[in-house]
Amino acid sequence: MKLSFPVGPEARRLRFLFETTSGATPSSSVEEYWDGDINWVTPEDLGKLSDRYVRETRRRITEEGYKSCGVSLAPPGSLVLSKRAPIGQTAILDVPSTCNQGCLLLTKLDGASERFYYYALIHLRPALEALGRGSTFMELSADDLRSVSMPFPTKQNQGVIASYLDRETARIDVCVR
Image (cartoon, rainbow, N blue to C red):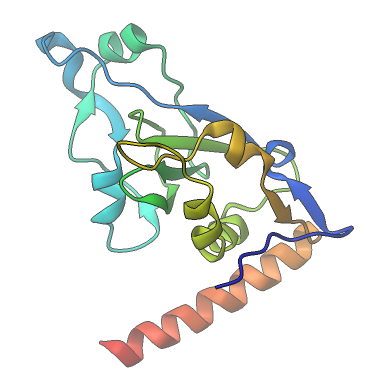
């Protein structure tokens, strides 16, 4: 399989489209860090989604847990991407959330549509998997992800493309049910 990344005038490195932050895990031995109100996304959560949106997670952390491990809280409309086990599962946050160290949070900058880049990252998943490194398990580094070239059509065209893909995906979903 030949893997390629977009090139040309309509391409931008991901670092110019999204602020990318890594996740972390509060200490499991501190009870006060767990069972709070903050969604804490893991690769397992991404693998169990019924659609592309994260609305709730299996585990949640408290404000104390959030502060203890130095993670970021990403706003709705941000993307979350698994960087290991497996690489490249992608979803859109429907609610403010943080994540564990198995995921990366991508908070969009001006000019980026979360629906369009959700589809773009799904399309690039084989290439992202190929960027994985490691001897024990494969992992995509935040720096490698930030360096990936992404398509960059106008904001209007991003919306048109995402709407088309939404319609076609829904049509396919009806056929397979």
